[in-house]
Image: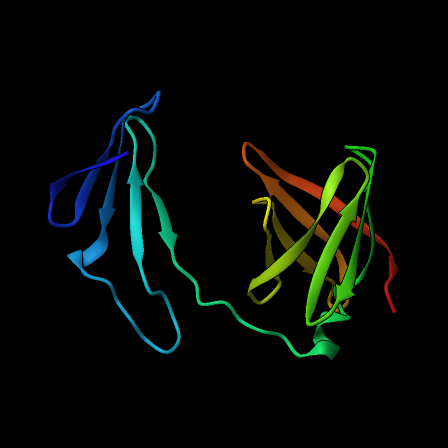
Length: 149
């Protein structure tokens, strides 16, 4: 729960840790491109975490195919298959529900389950894999084994 403590500042209550949210400049910034809302999460003895609201971006179908393929993590002994479905992408993996991917920016996607996929490219611009961030599990590498085309 958030308790207002100033015009642009809120205190997190009912959580197992102390934290404040500070909205920068005390205003919501609206523009055609760029952040809509920007705030900092402040916790004792930790550096500030900055968050920005992003406007969803729709990629053309031919660009979506760049991401389709089979990806493998040796560390997790897991295989993820990313496929084109309708106007978007969906990820399939053993033991987790299939989830659509929402394009955030450039090579970054977010699943409905909260997993963050950051695709990586080589010097020629080809996708080589992705880094998966899932809560406290961060930086999990998935190498591309085959393309989806």
